[in-house]
Image (cartoon, each protein chain N blue to C red):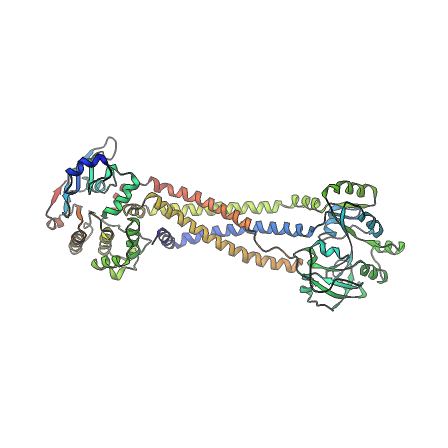
Length: 225
Length: 403
């Protein structure tokens, strides 16, 4: 880490892949202040964050991904303080180290399945490796659909593509926002298992934020907002 | 995989908008280039036809008519002048060379011009086949004449009196083709050139004489010509020479460049109007491009936000949108150029047939470059406006609104 001011902290957070301190966020100047519990996650560990709608789940996820700047507090990912990064560097850091899985939309509609994965690798400055894309597609059961348009995929297939897109570049952290809430029980199970598998294979930390209690049993660690 | 490919895929995914933008932009490009080219072609045609002629001396009358008749061969002459007088004028030391021309007959609508060998040199004409005129009654043909009438060396022709095609007033004397000129894109392409003696001979022995000037010709037994084309050593001697001719003789001297410039001034309003319309179309087409890019950015806000989470920087997204505009502009340019070539091809074909004019068909690189730069500028402006929402984009808000 080139930031000398961080040197002292490096010792402190040495074994944590993700660490947050006193995170708060405020949408409007006089709006309610959302404050979040501290999170500290060792490498390879997963976390489920449960909470009802409107409680600020997505806000927390966006704070963790550096998409929002907290009013107070800090987010450290792999010993890097997201707050300290300039916007361009933050984009690159996010692209390289974080994989995001969303609830519904996942991919760029003008590109087909295969090209979406290629674009994902391109923008995260990773090597564009066709073989790697093939492997991930196979693991997620999408090999047959690689030439398909995004609009031709079913909801379950889309969710699997979303997972492929979030893991293809071997991120250190996998953040999933309500990945299962629009799926039926069967697909819910498949998706959560795939997410966990992919996280394990790439040795990434998986954080799932959801109000979907069906998946509680899949996680050892969970907190409720 | 690079940003170009993503841009191309984006364009492919909205064929209607792309088609509309390319279509309208290419039409305006074709129009703009076409007008420029027509204008240049027109100017070039006339400029070319002036050749090295600085001054025309002819019978008194309208100076413009003299220029149109003796230089562009489009009008009737103002009258005749004395050959001896013309020879006297030619001896002026300021004159580099002076070419007498005499005409009054045609063959199937093509004018027969009696002159000296320097006439061909005025237009840098060269023989394609045959030899120059050596004796009276020999003619060499301009390239268009030979081509249109399908004449070869050794063919003979009967001239008719007057400058328009007619079969009633045919002369009896046969003219023989001895040479054919290479194409020059100048007025000489549609002329039949012979020596002065041939014209005098035909009219001295040719029987009926209808024109008054021919009566004069006969009555005085003096040789006459229609006009004298003069090339000066330096432009300095021009004005005093002009003044002297116009004041002291019964002839007039006219400046072709000046006369034709006056003519353009009064006729260029048409070009200006069409140019204006073409520029308006260009503005409209750029607005279309802007709307389509802006819509793309707005509709794809989520896509763009996702690309940002992939690690794309704002700059990369701008590049992507800019490339899209560039691809549309470039393909429009190619299509516009194609449309122009086809359109002008038809038009020139038609004009050449009717007016026996050879027109310049090549687009000037300078014009293409100029219009290309203009299009590029317009695209940059409309793309910059369309990109603005990207810069303002709040990824978090867009991603949160997804549900």
